[in-house]
Image 1: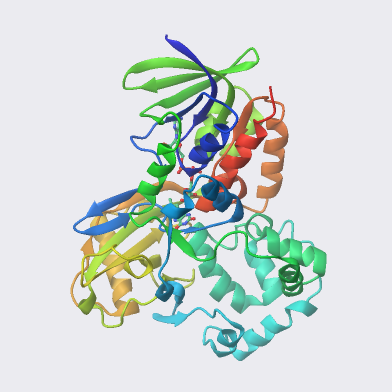
Image 2: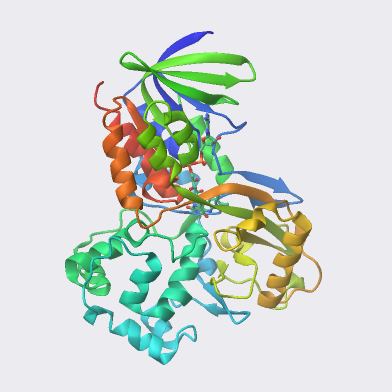
Length: 453
Ligand SMILES: Cc1cc2nc3c(=O)[nH]c(=O)nc-3n(C[C@H](O)[C@H](O)[C@H](O)COP(=O)(O)OP(=O)(O)OC[C@H]3O[C@@H](n4cnc5c(N)ncnc54)[C@H](O)[C@@H]3O)c2cc1C
């Protein structure tokens, strides 16, 4: 079998792997990126269908300081565009109607999403006794600090939007690490946040939601184009071996089987794939990785004529709480977020279904998914006529679900990896599921490998 040598290999050209490779290239001349898929970007994929620009995976990015700084260093921040100001308004489904998410103190006073008692309970948060939240679920933490209404009606839908998850099983420490820390330090989340805001200087990343004008798939390709060597696509790593002080990877591609030997390896694949590769080498690491649960998500963009909507699709979109009688997790009004996403006179409504709430959606036939989505949209916005389906994408392992034990799980994983010199992990299952978190995990992996081995 042909064997090639290189300085570093990054397995996976999703956003985590691309970030790791770009960062490694600062210190290493020969970085090889391998991906089993036929294009870079992992779940970041954009298609053009019937005049619409359709995202198949993530729809927008909230920039965080590590990602923003890395993009700015490479003049790649200019490739991103901020969502239109009109998309600031967000909605929550309540009793088959859309209620505005309160975005200001006055908004909280006025919102019908909380009863007067629910609002009062929120106000007493600074007086709630401090407790150790390290083993709590998000629902337990939010209920204890802010009351059951805030937990169910605001926090629950927010987590649906980010994790497609269930607030009763997601871990507070992993999901709301900063809020847990505010409570630990200040005895109150609100007081802790206020103190932190006072000490904070200028924001280190611009606020808002971002994408490239042509979508996130092309943005991933721009990241890949910045690499010295383009990612090798259709190249699946099937095994990983120790080879003296180096690593050897078995690679399967349409051209045949081959091997790569490198001093440094970043595994920027999902937790299940990393578990398979690490199984024979470090069974406990594989066990920890295999224990990370994932939510399935169905992505279903629908096109509609703007004048077929009884109420305008105005704002960012809406999220649906767990206890609502609806099939949708939520819907993004993509043509309101970014211009050029729908033909003139049309709207792009991007529906998401499944998640931990309805995992069977992943195996539900297309026509039933479209019918259920259209029924919910009709209740939320009023639809005259059938929407135009723009393709169904099924992500079986879409979003990691950090549970109560996640912080301890990742700490043990990292401690054990320290014994495998020259190997680092990156990906959305480590320190946060958003694009910016996955990007930051790639930077961190590159820095971990920066010390000579
Ligand atoms: C439907 C959906 C909507 C989302 N919406 C948002 C959003 O709006 N905003 C946001 O911030 N985040 C969103 N997310 C989350 C975010 O997009 C992901 O968490 C993040 O992009 C994951 O990046 P990654 O690099 O860790 O993994 P991936 O993108 O999964 O990349 C992993 C790569 O590894 C490759 N690979 C796997 N095994 C092998 C192997 N053995 N050999 C070679 N290659 C291999 C795969 O082909 C893949 O390209 C969404 C996710 C989904 C699925």
